[in-house]
Length: 172
Image 1 (cartoon, helix red, strand yellow):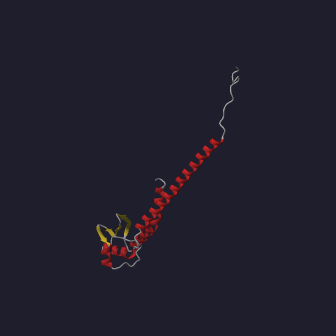
Image 2: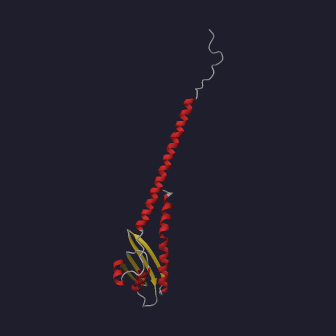
Image 3: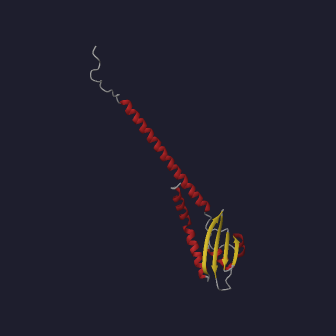
């Protein structure tokens, strides 16, 4: 199990590289729009993709809805729920509510890759199991071969009988 854990971490890290870049781009867009202390986090809980955005602004004209629109129009990852905290205001939007409020997304949405990551992990686990089984089978074949070879050598050798002690056979 210890050898599988780094493999799983590697698969997850490779799968999340695009996500990190998208989060950084979203954070830069929100900062460019005049928000400060911007924090973004994309998580998947029980199959629900959730994006959390936290920001501050001294401008009273800046609203949670404006952040929601920026997220909807520029964040390419699949989201089922968007949670936005601006100063002391907190709102949660579903993908359907955002679609109704702002229309279809202006950015091409990347497919929900949770299933792809799961398939990748399962594939690597199957490959690791097959390699392990082949290794065990090879080890069994090697052990059987060595045991049989050892038995053949024993069968080919003449038994060793020590010489009789001096004075053997006794004189009659």
